[in-house]
Length: 457
Image 1 (cartoon, rainbow, N blue to C red):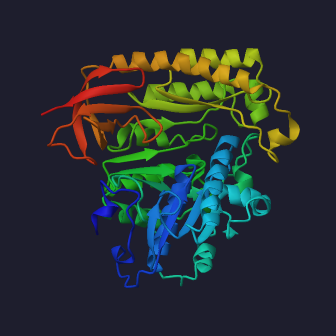
Image 2 (image 1 turned 30 degrees about the horizontal axis):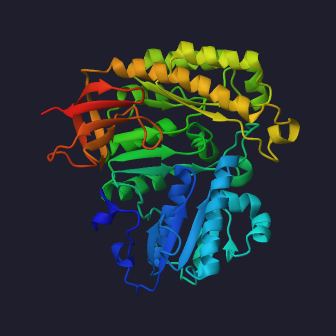
Image 3 (image 1 turned 30 degrees about the vertical axis):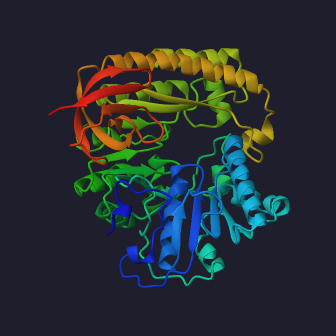
């Protein structure tokens, strides 16, 4: 397999059909896939790219308008900021379409699923709109013959040493603020044997860190066999010994499987990185959010994780400005963050989404200025917490995944940090250290959200 599937691939480099095994087709044109939104969207794009390559085209990823005669934009429509970014991107490419630097323009993904009719009226320069899970329809639109490619075939678009494994689609939760069930539908688990085969495929192409993703990992398996199987899936992946690290994203607090605790604690290579999006701690707000967990249950779960998985990093995300969050409820949230001292934390402003339970029942009563003030307040607090935690790490020797070179530095992450969302570790460039490798690093200094280190010889 060529090096474009492994460390150091440049996203503007085109892939060729000859780079996928057993395919012997003629190159006819080049297609640019632009991916917006989350890592789950990225997996969809990577699988679409593999189908396009199998059909005989070159494919490039996230290149500017005009770099290919055909462009496909995979959009996000989750919240207002994501919709705005998606629409701005469509408009830029539509302008290139009008000027003749693009022959055909297509839009797919969550925004197209949610607002297809409106988009067709407002941006007619787009040749066609497709919703989610319509890869084959896009292939037919491109006049490509559907090839009998393996289900797991993907073109890896990142650095190559880490990749995402999407274990399910959709969500059965009814969170008041969330439009995902409306866009993506009910939860549908991928059969375990198919996931294991996809993992082998990714490992064979140089992936060393496998990141399991879903709208709700904890629900994996419920629709197939009536029980939560995320612990079993993780155990089986670990037993294959194909990856340095396995990382789990988006573990819903309600119904958190007890069987996961020994997996995090005892299995080598499973990152002690517990990603639990709590959203709030006030019982009043959690009830309005329809989260299915309360403050007491949340605290018990977090304390148990701290007690039974020594050294684990707990990451959470919070929403401020949700209907029902007054000063009292925000004060509860602030005190919770102050007292619990999360290792990793992100905060988002409530986005009022039409046709969601909250959007239908409540008004967006909290001003954007107040939301911004509350975000700043929480993040100022978290900055100090993070600085204290980082300062205490000075002198420790830890494993670091080296992601890239940047200026005079090698930039990497610990097992407690996920790519693109958490802090990084900066190490002076050393010729003996290659990107995409796991190295022992001694921490020599710290900042609020970064660490500095040196290799251990």
